[in-house]
Length: 404
Image (cartoon, rainbow, N blue to C red; front, top):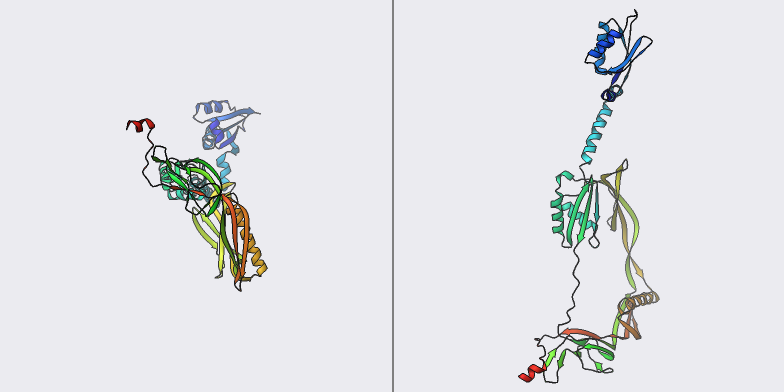
């Protein structure tokens, strides 16, 4: 009975104009293979429903019992669709829609990458494309396990890759290779030598033998802390010298600025439009570019249909037209630019490494530009390690020496 409710059904009315009884017809209908439902008698008239295909058989059976059979209504999918049988456009649209849904359900519509902290996402997407996974690619044609191994082999910074898909969305999980911490070898014999011509102002010695004292002057390359230690028994052994040596030293820097410079500035912007479908870019609005230099960048907007993302993007290219022009500076403006560069140098290179005790400025200028030489007097760390290229012989205990 529920099967007929889902299909097309026809309502019928059985009656007799001569007043014949419908009981024999009801018994014959029950004994027939015709499936019926909703049978009822009202005012000596019989109402009921049968499947649309069984209505001719009911009508024939009624005529055999000299009864009149009339169709009173018809319901179901066949009745509703019969009005559209001549509308070819709707049928074609329905077929195309079904084909599109079937096709897109097997296409990659979205790629999500996670777990990467140092590796750029664009680099991972490029590896995935080389492995056959990109927006618009067929999911059924890709071996996910093979793609995992291929992506991991393409990049030395990737340790492990996990790829899976949920519907048309592909998720990629990356595990990066973490570089082991750089080990500081503290057992290599070395000296501490002077990195500048300086006067020693402070020493914190942890291992090794100090040669000059605080207040002494040293030249660049002189040994301050020796890694060769003599024992009272006349033997020597090598150690890894460690210490903090501070001193006062001089440093000279020169800054120059030309009075005539060239700079680039933007004179206008142009744009281009393109569609990117299944990874293929189709330009439909090319830009009108002059022969000058330009800066280019593009933005990407994903297209949607009924709230669902499509494997299609609208690409907008932005062109900034650049031109060069000469700028003449006054000596005062050049001096201001040099002062800003000096300030940046002191902040980036001297701050934290050394303290500035004194500065001396020397300015020279001509028709081409301005030059400023700064002589710094600094106080900071002047020691640097330098390995001792010698065979290491550990010291012998006193007991072994006496036995010999």
